[in-house]
Length: 491
Image 1 (cartoon, rainbow, N blue to C red):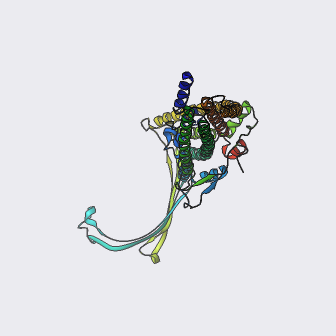
Image 2 (spheres, helix red, strand yellow):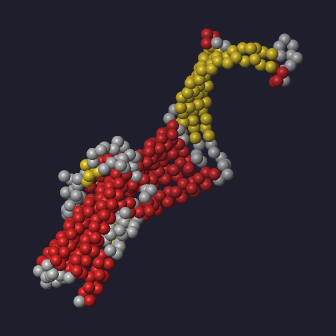
Image 3 (tube, helix red, strand yellow):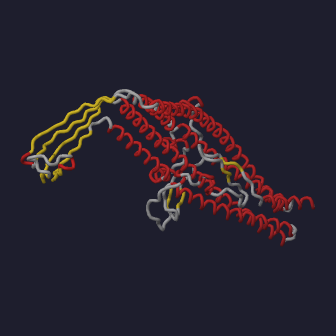
């Protein structure tokens, strides 16, 4: 009997000890610990999904709209739509695309005609002595004042400049890369938002499950009190039930607080006012993953991933930049001309023009061009190496997503069966305790088994849905197919 009491005390003690488990992380984000059914485990706040990269712009947003007194109903699709408009990372990427467009226009200006117009009217008085003309017979030392009126149009056009041509092609490729990067940023925003929404939904499920656990613990405590009054059980059983009830209440407080912080993190990422109260309308239940083989997924990823297309464009830009550097050693031909009227006044002016063809032939520049070519060649090799590495990383991400999807799917099935068995065990333990066959130790153990089974099921379902979202991201189709991959999420 003493041994049983000691075991019960150990069980109550360990039910209050923090436990940590690893949560599947989103791509390009650090691993972070997952919440458990134990109260107040350290390092498992709502912001843990961001980990040390809490300043990552994709976890921030530009707030839009005013806070409303009534809670805002928020679905997964609504969250994604808001994030694609107000997420900070996406807005910064959009400005990067505009910057690349400006650089391309500047490069094209070297190939297009440049025309300007000037209108001037000046009044001058010249001292000839300053030019060495003084004491000349018949010529006064001071000339003027006199006026000069000139209106003129200037035209400059590059006729043959391979450096400017290749430079424009490089900036065009850089613009393509920026556009692909923007599309990749949209996919990443979808993944981050879906992950935060799934995390908040999981937090809501934990709160609901914990409330049920608290109700069970309260019923057990009341039953223990009644049985003690009837003289069926000793006071230690009432004490155990009360300790368990308090532990369950502590867990509920912790989960409710975590759920509130998870909603804050979601609101920040999608650009909602932080003080806006939200209600999650989607629960994202279990749904089988899309049917495809690993080979099909790998091929689709290489054709759909925007970051891979961006890397290809960067290689093309580096190639054009290398050609532009080499072209500096070649002759360049340009035209410069102007036409206008010049005279003492607009009424006494006469047309004049200048037409000039400028052929520039580099002869010796002290190794400058060779140095620029070497720099451009090094950058080109870097881009090729980065492309090869990205290709391998995409393959790794696809295979990892498949492994996570298969493992988490199996875990969901096992956890669901374990939860059913744990509930049956609790029901039988409560009946046996009410009948006076066993003391409260067996019921407390059964309650902990249900709590653990609940947490395992909730965590595995979260991991499974997050693995599906990660697979959509790995394939480069997160924005287009997130609803399909998380099937059943929309109501």
